[in-house]
Length: 81
Length: 156
Image (cartoon, rainbow over the protein chains, first blue to last red):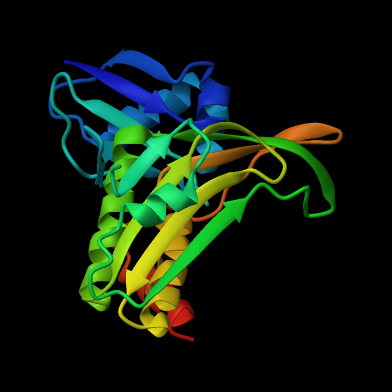
């Protein structure tokens, strides 16, 4: 299946793009999508413990299953205000 | 004017206050967050804010809902600006109206604390000598400890 990955702030800088299209195996969860990105961009691994994730613009969990066409966002620690 | 917004336009806190229903209201607290000229010993030149806009807007809506649960008589509006901002410009504006001042102050304080906890917005600081992404809290709206901390600060 195909998913859209959204990256922000420093994560976007590391990957060189804020939006990526990636293949994910059937039954994959959010963490599997992240792990695949880390193997592609090893510098992302520093964020393993501090990121949040969202599926289709709603906060989610790394154990959540992903579906074809989902938008998976990885969010570094926030700094609004 | 929408009560919550993520916008690239300069913030107008007067318009924000006027957007609130002030029937029965005796106090309005307005909080503005400004781009400061220094941070951790660095001379800041300007900031660029980035957001995951749909989720950031939902985050602001959630904060308004949470504030309403805690202070049922408070009416609140929050606008957060994104994009490039110069020193002294407002990046966030919060207006909290209530019958009496205590709840207006508390609710506005709660809102800015929660923004810093759960709203997916990031500031990119350009300073004299380089640039850096500022990273604060790992966002988790379901973290009750964080919410309680925001309430504790608001009610201190």
